[in-house]
Length: 427
Image 1 (cartoon, rainbow, N blue to C red):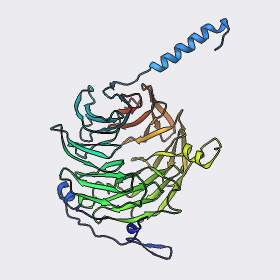
Image 2: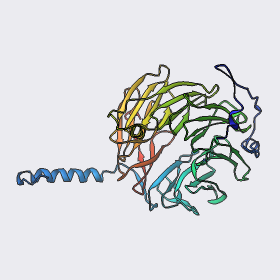
Image 3: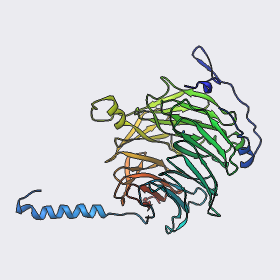
Image 4: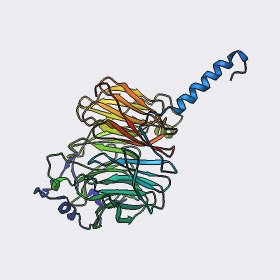
């Protein structure tokens, strides 16, 4: 294991000595910020009397199977649709990637394809619009990453790395990050291609995010990222210096691979999830773990391995308007915790495993998609389900909400993406 990334943190007794790096605080435009990332050597019955009853049951099952609450279905893919993203500027375009080695950029108003992202050699598992919606990145399992300019519908950059685990755009610059199976994180200025590498610990980089550091912070200071790894460790990176400022490991780290992570609105807190069934709250300034969250998985498990698989945390999120967090589990529980007291407020049970959650931007409603093919909206204040939307004939593998939370776009194993109009009594 490469320990070079831990050298920037010094220890004295039980206290952690943190070197404060004075970053350039002057305003910079996105291209100036991107230029700073220079190269550094551092991811049944048979009774006739019951015949009518059986007939009615079959009819009801068929009716349920055909239920489709969606407003629009996108059917261009010929395999499972793995990922979906909305353009952040207007929320009028979606990009989807799938098992058919293809990605499409299409209009959510009518499902019309704007252009196809061609040339991938394996399943497209990551698709993302840049912060200003001018670029869209598509990445496949083989490690081929392509970037397209939306206005011209042309490919402007491509790069091939090792097996791709995740991608993330910088929140205010044309800089793309990607985590690899070998643990390294690559960072490129697009479309120039200037790159740097954040050296990993020799195990898979499973998730990552660039920290926003608050809306009032200048772009020059938005130079931190958090990355989770297969060994359960979490690293906070200084993107300008190319070193890890904090490493959360051992007892403080997870006891299994990280599955997900996110940050609050100003980047001061990070919430991580793992196959160990726990979520951890981390202070990004100090690297200290502030809380650990877990729920009982219900049934007794035959082995620890089974328990980890069933209890795996699949998605985590912060509420923007109330001090609440949500943790979604593969066994179907959505847990709502009070952030201040760290007390479990509600357990919202699903019929199948949860794949992803997303809080609405300006309310206490949290949405989920799950393996039973449904999208559900939950009121986190009461723990009750607000509404449910169906239409897919297989599991939902990804989804996203628009800014107003009036629309959800889903990606499913039934080869389709769907658009659902979300209705609530208070809207």
